Image (cartoon, rainbow, N blue to C red):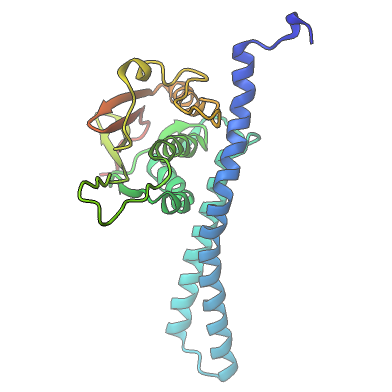
Length: 261
């Protein structure tokens, strides 16, 4: 390839954004399969009990209705999880539409549950009780949540073994707190961790392409860039701030529908 044909940094970043989304599918697939298997198992057991009751002639209408309601709920949950996986497909349609941001966040966290467990990081989630709507690509919120969570789990790193008999042992609480707030016509999503944070000088450029603290070349440094670009495309604000012992990521988006009274 001649020098003139070499891709620019912008072109390379655009290509790697697609790769980053594909990598997200791989990280989530095992967890998603586990989460989807749970409602399937509930459905299987409820259907088995219904069949056995019919065969024995002991089926009671009230009991049957309860089990059918449980099946309906689990079908809805499985459908929600499958729909959430589309957030990480590079071929998904990204036209703006009206979404419930809180519902999108909850779906993303449900898909990521297995990753929190594997990393031994506790999730403290405070959803808003105010239902609002905003204009967004249908999967943008899930993608932002996935990238910020991934960033946090990687920042905590592997679980360190602590000698239970050591007198000077220090145990760091591995936790991510996610809080939703609806106020003054905006939906705000705040992520706060205790994973050590970033130096102020580095923090100022952390959302730029190819900027990463990973010294193993295992990350392209595009996760926060993708988040910033997505939020900016929705006329929102994306902010990184240092907190004691960690980092706060704040996403603020304008709502198009006020909370239901």
